[in-house]
Image (cartoon, rainbow, N blue to C red; front, side, top):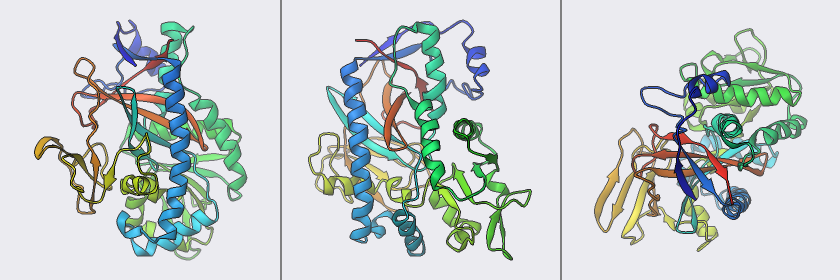
Length: 377
């Protein structure tokens, strides 16, 4: 793995905007093609293999949590448990997730699993692929995101209720909308009948005990780029178990277990000393070097990095009341002062590609940049 500095394409802004990438720059650049990360095929094979194995391990962890009634570790409300277990027992399907890895000195370690509402899918599947076609089309990427999404939706179609598949996210965020519309476009290419409705515009009909969109069309299947813990906190979301349509929600409710950082100590308990896991516990467990993470934090919020009793780095935010996990500190490698995280995608239960986000500090937050990659060697 190497970071290679290069001049960006002269017309890169218009090139990515033609793809529908409207959030390449906000107050600070997000898409950064002034460099790329070069990987050898052997490294990619390791990442792909680890992604597949960890996905299988995570499925085992869901069953383990249920069998041992460990929901309290995840701050999951008691009232949600029967519905979570129902979606698991009925095999409600999932479409995607993203494992975040640190790759350093030949070691590939899982930092966390974004299993419910991961973004940067569009950048990984589309934008960096077209960058590679312009830069050097003779090279390859770890990138079958687009093909696997279409195939995944085709497979998932047989699980769905009769009727449309709605796609939903918040109105305010162009990034969320772009990723949602990308997933929707892939579903349409797979032959599904789809419709966009914003989370804010979903309604509940007390007379029919069903969810409705703005045009009073009943919701029977819905993809939501909106966290389960927020959904169940909303008054309207509490109606989900009472829905007369028993709509399929994607990602399914059992993903609440996998999208929670309490998964990390559970995995370590189940698979101690696994080469892709870092030791993790629900307390500091006598560790001198650790990262303290709220179990529900997002975008690197409320993180504390401790090295031999000294606070190495921390971040602000509104999380922590729900509880913490403690993971052994394994600092990201530095490339010219840039700290990359590998986001490796699992789509329809298969390893499918990766994207790299880099930050100017050890904590990857919402100011990180997306940098493309290629395979060479």
